[in-house]
Length: 215
Image (cartoon, rainbow, N blue to C red; front, top):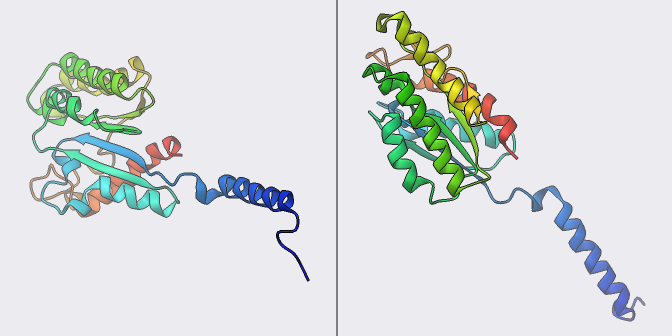
């Protein structure tokens, strides 16, 4: 007959070993999902589509398929600019943020806002987030303007995002709409906003840039 409690020290040792095993097991870590905020405009908001058809929701699905638990906040707002994002981040940064994706600037360009102003706003967004959430990782997604905006402006605008990321030691995604912009089959009839297929391509593009930042 086995007396389980005849040697208390052995029982305690076994329990202690079990606790260590559970603490080191994969299921014990990563239980708290990483909180990702997508600060963007109508493209991020999924204009003309359901919320689950916008790329932030699809990024969450892609991450889940790879075993990552994310808590995604789609802070996309139609018509928003980098200045609007700077105002909104004051409130958003009060909540925990593990990763911030800045996907603003398209409306700045369409309004002809000076590139240096947009860059200053993006850098200020980074500063505000880091002040509130020092450990947050930040990804700056670039935008581009059509050629009819003029070569000087489009060239200067294109540099804004990479320079802002470099100046603030953030991560950069060269062009959010890579492979999607100006393709009728990937956009709604307005020719500006991605359709579901276009959003799917953006999600894959963004997730590839985000993957190295995930736990």
